[in-house]
Image (cartoon, rainbow, N blue to C red; front, side, top):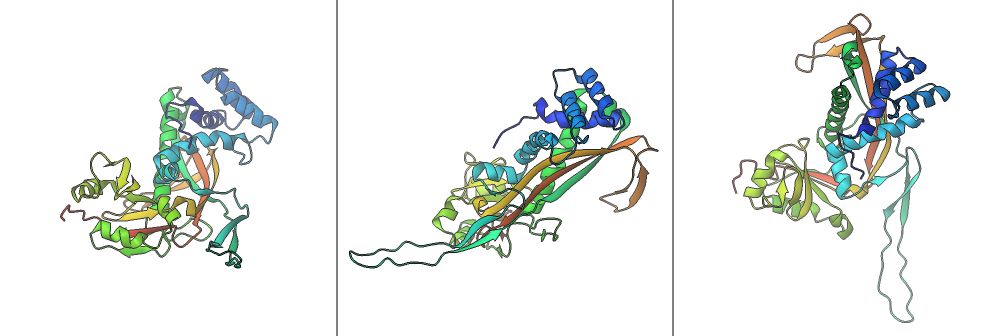
Length: 344
């Protein structure tokens, strides 16, 4: 997986292009002139705006170069998320959006045979899957004064807001046992029906849960635990401080990562190659003349705001992604697996 640092200016190009459009009130020509005066000819921002002017006139065109520019932001989202860290250890089964993918539902087996004896023929079955992309979106509201600032920290702040919000939403959707999905809108967690209660003896619980996996699945298996349970896991002898920390490592001999999306005391086991993943990139759009409803996450009270009246602008980032387990043993979750109290 390509690593892109937060200091990489390439990840700023799309954000700066959208900022230029906001400042120029949607004019591609004025936006390109502003970008050239603000960031110089050495950046791609003005070129991107001019290229889109000659094409469809939309910097946010899902089929255009803006999707490629959004890839740098996607890499930052994946590097921060559990999904990206899983993919770095064992790659997911990637497929283009809605493309037919032929998967084996019943594997052929090999048998011994003697001289002059017939070979035994086993059944083999296939299934065709098509995985449409779902939309993970975040709307960011900023003052126009903030977006007009030439401080480079402005671009970094916008990018961090997008990365943090999307990585948290990805982890919750992928790993939270409470996420059953919404048909046509949000993919469910990867566990399916493989959510079982543990005994508090992690080694025993993991052994029972993974007993039904094939050798290939065992080799591709990655464990996920809550970072708050790392100390308890080390105290219980499931790993040691040199092999496991909040960045991951090894748990009971298996490669492991940490995520707060995993409930306390629980351990997830995931076989990424058994999970179909489609990733069609990210775009950013903007608006300066709209009315929106803001909901307080604590009180759930809503208030109505006007972008024009309050001198605000909104940026909307959309990430096109989806996943689906291809086998019943692709993933599972064991609750009460690690004794969080640290007692043996």
